[in-house]
Length: 127
Image (cartoon, rainbow, N blue to C red; front, top):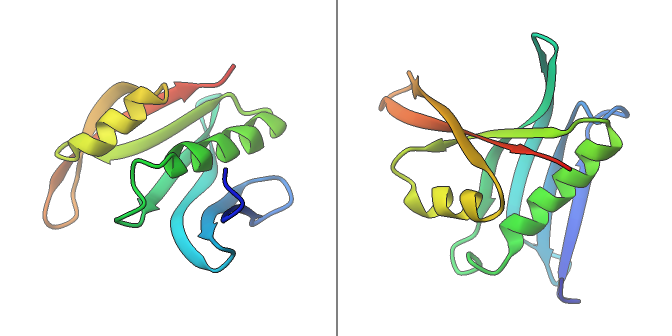
């Protein structure tokens, strides 16, 4: 990460139940952000990653990877070894990016909000 870019993690509770990861340019301009929350479902524990955004003009510069690496670090410290996220099936750039950094498509479901869309669920198992 260059000296012009800062990665900021805000854990919203002491046990990393949820949080926000931001990338700041020159300490001020926010150029990337994502949130995560801890989910426990049927004995399975994972971080669900949501609202992943990188500002146009800063894409393809590694900021997505940096944010997800930070979430992976927080997950491991919290004894979580699985990350999950949903991607719009029509967003081929995002799908390619997630596959490149080790996520695998696990399934799909319909988002019932208007307009309806198909979402792919992607999963990454952490070492």
